[in-house]
Length: 110
Image (cartoon, rainbow, N blue to C red; front, side, top):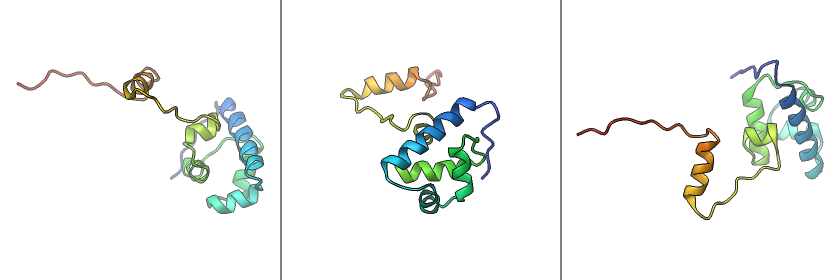
């Protein structure tokens, strides 16, 4: 399942490369070991670390899954953890304002 994430994502490439380097260092792991564990080509992972844009979203998913992160966390901020809200509605409100949920308004059936 290929998905070109687009040529205008230079910021994404920088974040992905930085996050991968940090994750490798924190886990005392080599790029080839991560590639092997995640099931992606070593050259692909090396290209991402060098700042190239990922071309296959499934491969990004495999790496994010290996680290227990979402794709968004891997690409943009590997340190982001979902806050545990004391009030579930508080978390829902912040998610709605962030554009994560779609709200559909319709007239109720009689």
